[in-house]
Length: 49
Image 1 (tube, rainbow, N blue to C red):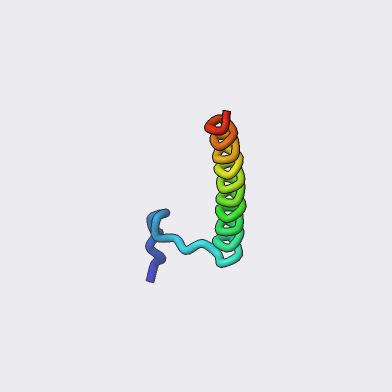
Image 2 (tube, rainbow, N blue to C red):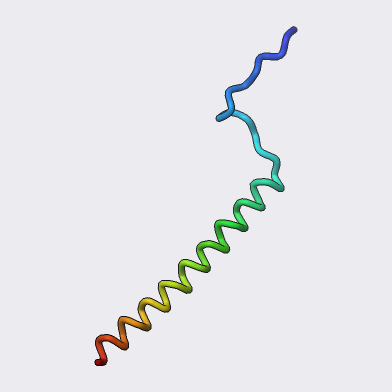
């Protein structure tokens, strides 16, 4: 029986690859939260002035 090639969207990624990408997303989320905090802090300063 011949192997039928799977379309790329059906290919399963390895668990470690998914975990690595998940970690990257979490890191980016932390960076976004940090930047948001900085923006909020600057906004407070502007409002105070």
